[in-house]
Length: 125
Length: 118
Image (cartoon, rainbow over all chains, first blue to last red; front, side, top):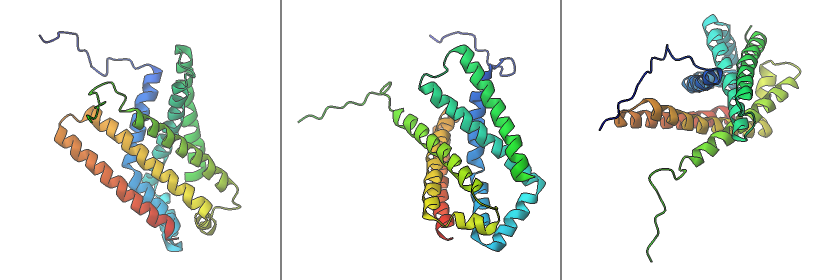
């Protein structure tokens, strides 16, 4: 017999708690970083290969769209890094009670956004 | 002698290796990030000559290569999880997994080429 149970998965009606946001953003940021790996390798290649390719690299960095993409990827990396460290902490049974998971979730979101602004301003503008 | 088959279909912690790989590679990337930031902070200026010369040293090349290798393994485990979660048709999922693996192997070759052609 098929189980009849309420299946209410309207994502817009589910209020995701803060640790849930950190979790889904960890996945989204990881996926974005994977998708943009060729771009990052291409930039690294150009920055190192020769003097003329380095100049091309600088021109590419001057492009506003490129700046925006790299700012997004910088955030993705930082969020992924700090959320990942938080998970390793939780694997070691550190900060697993509700109050602490909420506090560390806030910390991950705030620190990665703040560092994105700081490093982005220093490296991209 | 009869060989005993220990494999059970469910609940035998076959995901444990991936779990460990994901954490070890993650820690490698975190450590390299700190290492890179320290090395760059110690440079007098970040022009082309300094930037390039930093990566010509073996003590920089090898950790950089290891970090990128760690990233590719990490990306494989993560992408595999994502594909298993969202792509239900087996054929499509398999094709996408193969695409990911082929891309990551290609990136590895590219990485070697970038770092050792300096």
